[in-house]
Length: 459
Length: 96
Image 1 (tube, chains in turn cyan, yellow):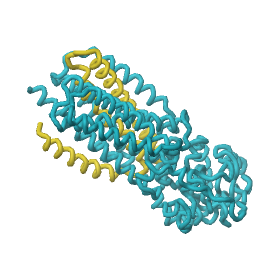
Image 2 (tube, one colour):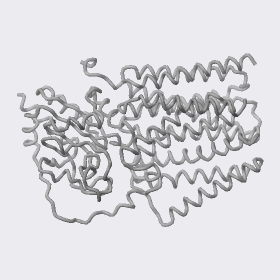
Image 3 (tube, helix red, strand yellow):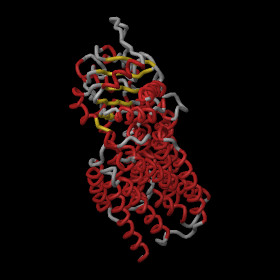
Image 4 (cartoon, chains in turn purple, green):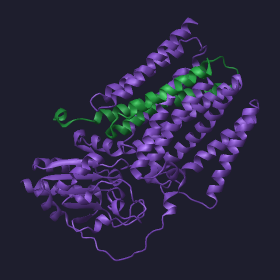
């Protein structure tokens, strides 16, 4: 009894450390300490559980910890920063599956218990199951083991509706007859399938929302499992993480001017009819040499990165270009759209990796009022997030989406492979503006060519 | 434990979560997500209890041990990867 009391006391301490960990993430200066405090809280919680008296055999625990810790450390230390989105999807999936197993094991040993227990058990396996397979699919899409494009097939909605309805009806039966083991297993299997069908129709550019939603779900599962095994720490942490994922999902959806339901069930790519050629417009291109001459005279430059930067691994080249510009007496800023990349904050991490000082990384709302005074805006691997049609063209599918006002800069360079459309499948008006010049080519090679120009000019 | 107390804790924690997370700048949203993810590995506590209880069937041993492995993977991977990311966020003055 006293050991259990002690364990619960330590759990309180752990929750406080977790809370401080998140609080310290409020600033990049304290963030690393926050993470260490949080990890300390986790260690305390684990030790307290081990000595709480609930545990009689340690051999399997030891095996599990050794395997999990080794693999976790290996993967975490090996993953490149461009691979962060899939890494996080993988972690979500593992956490969710662990929750399912814990809930399952509790059901197997103790039965479902009272009504509350049964309901939370049901929620744990449904949300846990779909989070596990959903994260798996998200991982596949992000790591390009699966096609990133939405996978659509005839009758998809019917299949999804069928799954939702059967999971719900079986759930009612299960809650009324919790002893029915086969119902439990059927619900679990259906939830696993549902997770797959939920994520395959979602395209690559919507991944920031998907990852945030899965983050939220993995918190919710931990929370409901906390109810199943009567553990307050799981409830506290699960609901904090659930709230976290929810906030991020809302931020991401606002940044795309779409609702959560539209992202998750809309099949965005399928809805939009590609515009016909319409009037023939000609975008003006510029050579690297001429672009260099303009950059050399620029007093302020804003670089707007997008997912293409990550694909081309151009972050180091971009930082080098930024340094040359600064040496030249130019003010360099980076404008980061909230949904640039494949997860919230993706671009910030890439540029931080390349040693870009974080005070140069500007949010969309902070940079937009300053765009009028910017000499050159360089768009690298971004498309829809700088499309001015979002501001004025009511017929555009992205109308109303907040964008970075690249077109307001005196000159805009767009580094791009071709005139191909972005994810939304629409033409970008920016490319035809009078002040816009296209630099066709691979992002990394083009930026390196610009850097080379700066190098030769200094000799 | 009474259900109502657990719900009480749940509601307050959600509010705490909202209060804490809305202060995190977009700059740090990726590390925020991976740290939240690592914290979510707190399910390891439940996994430990499941794996360490008196074993009464092969199934519970498999479930418990896999849960411990998966949750530990989540915790260790999550914290390490967050630390790697946060290490990179530097201001120019400190790097030169």
